[in-house]
Length: 412
Image 1 (cartoon, one colour):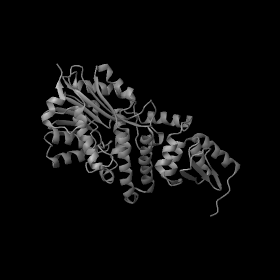
Image 2 (tube, rainbow, N blue to C red):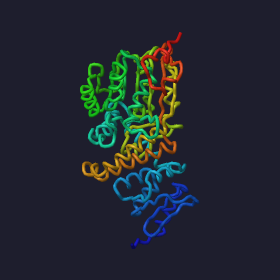
Image 3 (tube, rainbow, N blue to C red):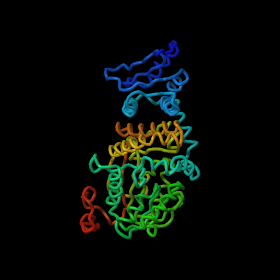
Image 4 (cartoon, helix red, strand yellow):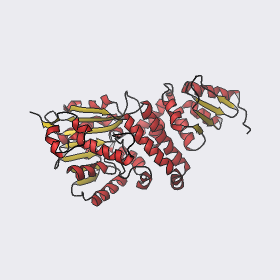
């Protein structure tokens, strides 16, 4: 197959791109020129670049340039896409001034005001329930699962996660729960059905709330679960428990003090709270391509940032756990199911959309595998809370109601 000759300028641009990437074991091919990494590691993938304009975009901003060109089919990756992305994410050289500037611009246009949050959430979660049904589990849980063993099914792992949250909270029959950012309602319904809780769940995704209300009715728990289509900042009333699973990433650091005040006026000094969120080890903005195309307004906080807005209200931290590898495993399941449905996604939404979501899922697997992203669970309580876990036995042994008084001891 004849490949067009590259010019000295093209070869210089390839060298610029290589300097941005560092010695990652990926070959870059443009025309008749193949740029190989300066490393002894075996090459694990080849990126074929079609033309100079695509190469310039890659050299200016590898994140944006690659994401856009892969989505619209200009770039092809030969080899294992996830493994190739792992190598790229492990490189310290990717960020540049253009990427940082674009990220700050998106922070401004995607600000998480009440109106901005509604717009951001609508762009991601209201794509259609049928789309998410193609690759999520039966309960439509779109957050990290918990795998008691690596070989359990996604359905079993998501059920185990729901139960783990309830056990961490020591949830009891009749307790009132406020959940913010409830997704399609799986956790709220599980709390009511299996633990006898009374749940009020807030969400600003119309499609998710509609689904959740119908599911609660079918599950026979609609009298104990109320799904409210409203912003978390409009929450009023008191509850025994506050829960947020997969919502903190959408709040934005500027609005953490607001969330802290909402939590405190909900559970006061006597209640319990739980946060489950994607985070970082150190402050860093979300991948700019993902922020632009997949998660507008998204920001994964550090553990310190999440604990920081609890501190002014004198909340006590009871338990912290990092489930990073569980999220990598969850994403592997989602990606595999998405690939099985890929042709259907192409038929219904077009090839560019399908490739964009494939890249998002593959890149997410890679970021959790290499430790660029974390998955934190934080259990906390008010300073006068009397329900304090005596040991952690309840977290890792099947919860039995008759053991309740032994595992959760009233503080004296």
